[in-house]
Length: 352
Image 1 (spheres, helix red, strand yellow):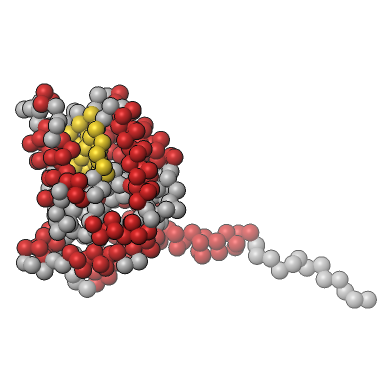
Image 2 (cartoon, rainbow, N blue to C red; image 1 turned 30 degrees about the horizontal axis):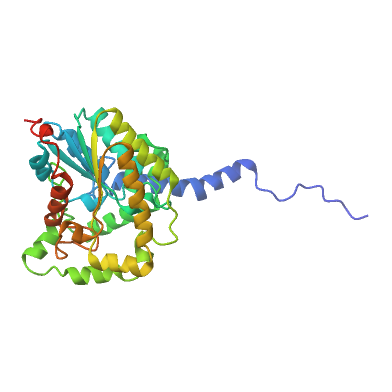
């Protein structure tokens, strides 16, 4: 008779399986999270053991605004494209002390969060908000910027990952590795001032190149326009315009309207070579669609909107750009004078 093997199948005991799962799955995640927290490549956890690879613009602007005294009555918001909209010029035109809260890839929902932060958390008596609205704000593919998700000042305003998940992002891990590599090379890692105390963006290194005649705008634009759609977010004929973003925009205007905050908004100019590329892509019609929506929203709340997409609309200088979409202060001053030139005289001087 053939003996029957009654021994149990070769299975991993439950306790041993748990240990294996912890070692091969949980431990790497814990180590990655610990690495990102200790290295703190964006300077958001406050460990201070390493110089950040880059500052978190959302956190940096939040701290600057909190320290800005006296508090502003006017606020500039938008993406990095409004970085050199000058608060000093705004004050000259309106009489309101002003702060620039331009941050990377801001969504319509985050615009509302920024103004709420200024009014409710910083007790700023905001009377006027100036908004540069990128067409990409209404692209359904636009997600909340990673810096906003990581900033302790703004992640409370929207649904995002829990704290333990925020330290596990791929982007942050790569940045942590870059910080360590920099330290091993004994690099100073010095970061020039990014902003004035009023939030105005300081293009320090590029300005030095302009001053010594080594800044080549044409080359910068050529490099960036090559295979542009694969490198940057851009409106194309197939772009889906987000109804959620439209709703968030109207909610933002409603929130300001309920608090008697005036909103002046505009679509920012771009370099003629960029506009030419958009024309070749067939994107201009989508720009007009977004402009029409913004015009409608301005009429709905009795606000001021201007479409400055064409640089000629402000008699701008195509040489006064940092790249295809980021303008230098000269052109931004022209925008402000066109946008705020008719600002009510009875509103001026209230901050005096």
